Length: 197
Image (cartoon, rainbow, N blue to C red; front, side):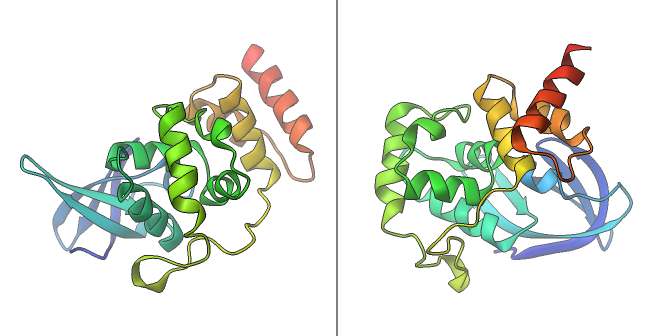
């Protein structure tokens, strides 16, 4: 298993990254939550990784945070949730927002993530509810007993996704706004105004 990669970021084209490590270029699939934290190309990065081996391919998934990788590993253990859907879930909402959905039995919010249907959302809630706070791979506790409240930017992105915007578009709209000290409602208002222009 490849536990992490540290190297130079050569290219980033969601959902794929190209990282050079000692002369070898690794293609890594990453969720949008990782893309938000990436430096410019040419900079050194460290990604926590998970290798999926299939008959026809070896696919490396990379995450900026250990908690995201732990959540990814928990998700792919659930029947009907493959690596692509797990990546989609992590791209559609932060780990903390996902935890809140599980803790509050909010399967409706999970269905707003592209590719997650009603039955899958309900299965996620049922199967992960008892695992909250028990940790996961390598003892990483990806979910605390009480999830941290989402920040205004994350909530605004989630709201725009709920309005029908694709996760990358919603994130781009919100990140283009000077959001310091703004309420969630004001961030959403300004993002929609900017999109309308």
